[in-house]
Image 1 (cartoon, one colour):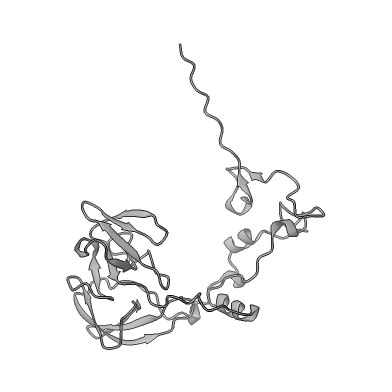
Image 2 (cartoon, helix red, strand yellow):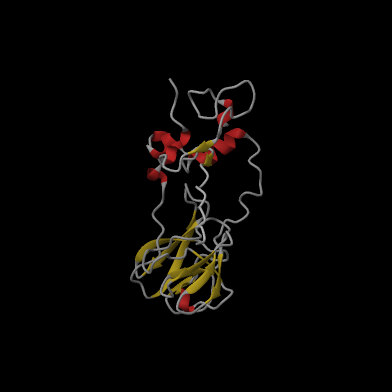
Length: 235
């Protein structure tokens, strides 16, 4: 009896794909109703994240934010109107063009959704009825001017420069994020385990296309080609 595909098992959850939330520090969200400065109390490591976290105190309340490059203990973090300094939280409408930002909100008040990986940043391209932001992928996204973002680059960049050197280090690195550290090609499996399995050599052994109406876990290979649009005959 064959096994489910990895994509199918991942969709059903389970201990091997469940994030170890008991090790996570806290959810990182931009402060909701805070006006005024906060003080950076400490910079800590957060399991399951690629960047360090800054422990910020707002009006006697401890909050966790993604640490920006250059932020240090004792620094003031401005929320709302403030200078263009790394770590400050401002609306996109108040940030000049060309400024590097991270942890950008998709909708005003959602706490930040985009650009949260270590060493990444987005660039403010233009401002108007919508603010155009260039994401790290190069894609341009239009966002509401009332969406907030953090000035600067996410700290922790360069983490991939040092090689892992051995499989055990890779295993423990990915374990904290509940990621699989090994990948097996579909053509290396048996026919019961994968649509590409079987055969005496690395060949799919049949068409690799799959129907567009198939469920997500079954979509392995290429999607079936679109139907050709028949041109209307001229009268």
